[in-house]
Image (tube, rainbow, N blue to C red; front, side, top):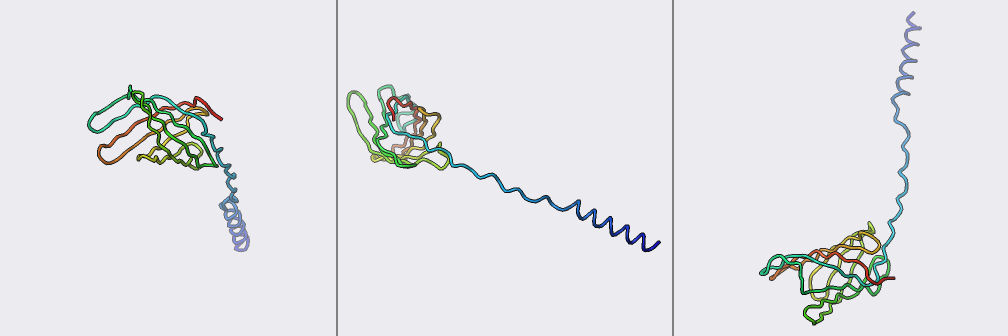
Length: 148
C-alpha cells in the first residue's frame, strides 16, 4: 500500500507541475512606423494668444502664413510671413516631425519656438512661445491653402 500511495503522490506531483508551467511567450507583433506627413505648401489661419503688457488677443490686425518650401523625411524648412497694417515681416524656420508622425517642433529665425500637431492632411495646430521680456504665447489653427 505504501508503494501505491507513493506512486499516486508522484503522479499528482507530475500533473500539478505540468499544470502550473507558464505558457510559452508570444512575441509582440512588429510595430510599423507611422507615415511621415507631407507638410509642404502654404498654411494660414486664425490665432489667439497672450502678450505681456497687452494681455489676451485674437490678433485682428495680424495675418500669418507658414510656407513650408522643402521637406526631407521628418525635417522641413520654410518661412513665416507676418502681415500687419500692410507691412510684411519674413522669418525663416526649420522644423522636425516627431517619431509618432503627428507632433512637430519649429525653431524660428527671429526667435521663439513652436510645437504642433498634425490634425489631418490639411490641418495643423501650433503653439508658439517666446520667453524673455516681453513674453508671449499663441495658438495657431492653420489649414493648408496650397499644397503638394
